[in-house]
Image 1: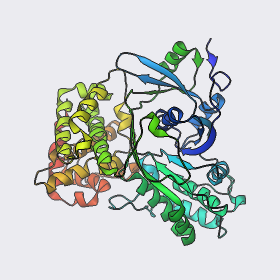
Image 2: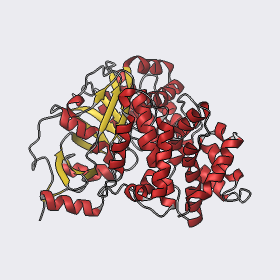
Image 3: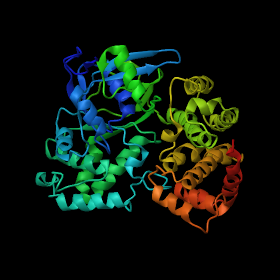
Image 4: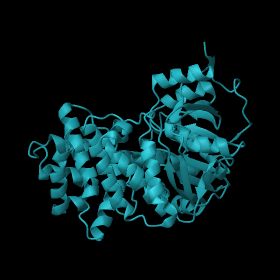
Length: 478
């Protein structure tokens, strides 16, 4: 029988809780928590879940420890990661507020998904969607609880102040930090968004401005928002993975994480209260992040998005299966060619990066499921397909390689809806309304335009682009 995995079973250094993390999922544990464990023996993480308390419930009895399975094409490697000191339910607002106000806390990291920032669609510069029902509800709650300096401690209990969005919860903690000695803090977004630091800042500061302009000014002056580009394929853990870990290590780990050998973390920004030596684990700190961000969002994430829709339409379940399909592989290469034309910086080494991606995608032992990647497609496409399309059009080309991602998304949505499969998307209600509209014939130009409008109203108004998307839609049949 396997031994329990807990702090008494594993020799670990005495870390201090100096990082707060929100979004305790597999990616965080394969990426930022792993980098922290590798880089520094003094820094520790107090982790909070985002939407569900499940991950915290699994990790808490293990003292935050978990096994990271690095799955190469031929064999697995196992290591126990010790950087998470405590795991909590993200809905525990009093505790989150306490940790964010603690002067020992120097960094807040986030993996709350693209949808978690509640940005207005097609807004250009990042802008909080004040019309979002959850944002509006949180603002009402915050306004009632604010006493002119902090959100009253008596209101922090779950029965009094119930917040739906992560930025609102962060704002409560920042107000408490300001009410102390105003210690500086770095907020580090690790979500797949262009200018993710700016997005995090726009979301939190906009909420603050609605409550108290002076609080918003304090955030601008004392909180650094760091931009990052993150990369490590991390599929969902299966029951078979849990059994593999127990057999290989002798520990009964309730929540191991499986990941690939490759990892990348590029950061740009200030850490006014210090940070771990993440460089020791391979992180890069650069003066200009945007080229690296484009490379990753377009080539890796863009290809993932294309395969997630086109691959499912052709009967595939994983990235490796989709890439083995010559037709899908050809579409990926066409999209990469289009994107690469706008990635000319020598330091990006685009030919080498493409070769590495093919090897990573083709790893048959990493079961990266297309349905998981396809979630929140309406938000992802805005960052992954539209910039390449716009760049191609500005260069005098048709941009069809980028529009194919949107066409595949339209077709996959229609197929899911027809099969009665729920649509996992932050804009699911609006998407279902379009798909339910009897006046919009399935596969028609009108339906394409209505779906595209949910991604970008400007593109939906461009007849040539919508016609091209509609013409591409039937081409995914197996």
